[in-house]
Amino acid sequence: MTAEHTPERSPSQRARRAKLRAGGTPARVTRRRPETRGRLLDAAFGVFATRGSGRASIEEVCQAAGYTRGAFYSNFDTLDELFFALYTERSELLARQVAAGLTLPPSDIPGLIAQAVQALTVDRDWILLSTDFRLHAARNPDVAAALRAHRSKLRDALAACLTPAIDRSGLPASLQTPDGLARAVMAIHDGATTELLLDNDPARFRSWLTDLLTALLEHPARHPPPHRPGTRRPTPAS
Figure 1 (spheres, rainbow, N blue to C red):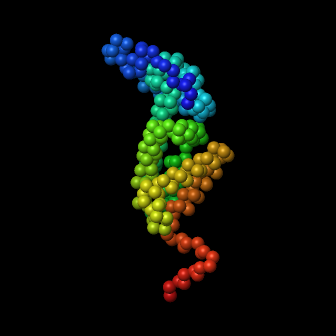
Figure 2: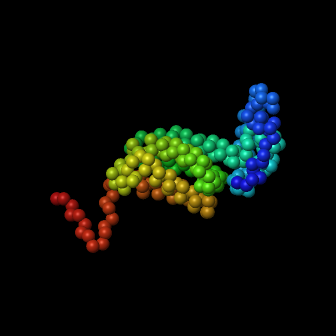
């Protein structure tokens, strides 16, 4: 994000952001402040998805929300802060949806996969925004650390729901731990979302993601390993 997004604050602005009056006494937080913050976040979602985080401006967010720059600075210091607050809110909601969505008994693997696809499937605007955020995090170690923490929560939710149901003995060793399996599921999802960005076909995306997760999760130990040329197939026991 550019320097335009981080202007120098006046003493009164910094005091207001810290919930203090210029004289140092506590400022009254109005009942409307949570509503103002929520409207700014909702407006920013559309602006960031349409314009990209690197091209969006504070003025565009304020105009979309119907507020002045003063309302923005009473809630956020910079667009970076707003962007991170928006990502945090949406990603934590996604983690809760995954945890709440995977409710079928462990014996119903196809049903669990269907629920996982439904819980993980998000709209194209969110994919655009989260892709921007990952690129931003890749260039900012502090943001990257926070992003890893949020993704860890999502992995934990997936691992708790999926690993009791999956026979992992037929998977490579790196995928036999709950964390390893959850990472694989997230990697498959992340790759599939790239295709969704390019072809914008949600039905195809869900079908492809279902097939990929089924190949990974549905009883891998029951399928014999592929025959390698030059080796003898095992003889079934009589």
